[in-house]
Length: 206
Ligand code: IMP
Ligand code: MG
Image 1: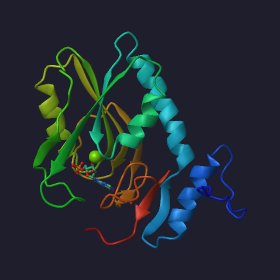
Image 2: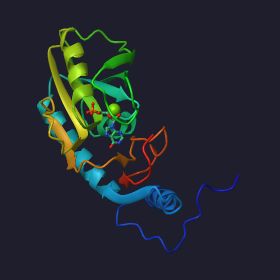
Image 3: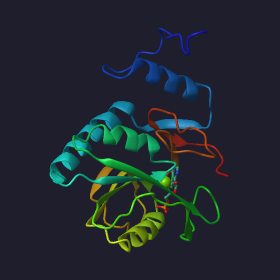
């Protein structure tokens, strides 16, 4: 089988950056005019995850959390974040859908896939990819709080600078501008989730 990528000598990744991932990301971006500038670089994400993981490890010492990932966007972040937490965490996933557009939340949200775990008495840490209006998360937190967890907190990789007040977020990776972004789990019509960094999306939104 032919190798996935033959490294081209003109692409020089920053020191410490995974060369294969970096080259793949660069190549995807070069071939796609809809992909704009890097908003959060791969190494910034990696450093931030290390920092968040250390904080979570300290805050949850003696009470390992149940990580609740919000599908699909959070799967990449949750995978990396969980490996930066030095506690016996458990995993569950939830999928929600918003009525209306797939790129803008209407606020009317329904559960497409529910958790397998009973939350009663559990320390629940919701892992989200991005908080925009905060409507999806507000719905989710109301729903989860009703299941009587011992504690309920949120770790969001990205928070957009929108005027709407987001629910209280215990852990935040990056505050970013209001532009639509893709990569590292975030999509447009299911594409771009495998970009190793976060980029601005310059194409038409569906
Ligand atoms: P909210 O309810 O307005 O906070 O929207 C949250 C959801 O909208 C996220 O979980 C994403 O699925 C989606 N979303 C919002 N902004 C973006 C973006 O810039 N790129 C990709 N998805 C986004
Ligand atoms: Mg999401």
